[in-house]
Length: 218
Ligand code: SF4
Image (cartoon, rainbow, N blue to C red; front, side, top):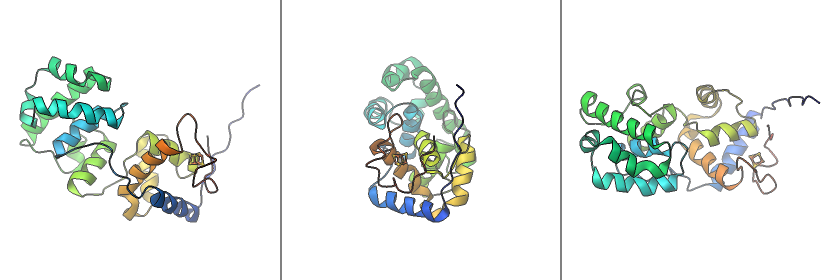
């Protein structure tokens, strides 16, 4: 028998703010899970973090930076050597290409300095809006949007805040609905929530602190 599609249920603005405040209180110490010391170390960590855990990236990055301590050295690194080092992060061929091409672009086009604006950041290979938002917030104290990753996509849909089809649509919807003072926290809060309760394959709704408010959309 053909399965009927369940209707997406939206949360009210008041309920959404209650959800955000409950989660903000639950994850008071939520912060970026990637270790970094400078903008370029965060750029590289974000390239490596695609489909990989932060914990693994935090192990691999120091190995890479020990051998190639700055953007100039990395831009001249042998691609085979980068591949060997970053292999444990998965998709290592593409990631190595992006790392080298990004470092070359930063050296050749931006005088060796990681750009501090959205347009230039998203022009770097391997850096999309999500990563650019994180770099702007973490390194330059600039809040221009909300970093939308798989956790944000899944959980905002479940709760009933956004059913956008693309990360761009979701970001636009979230930035329209959520007050700007929360934008830099939303990603970190939802990443924590996605790891603790709203786990992709098996959400723990019974113990979830926003169970009463969440619309539990499929
Ligand atoms: S109630 Fe369930 S679906 Fe909703 S946020 Fe919590 S764990 Fe996720």
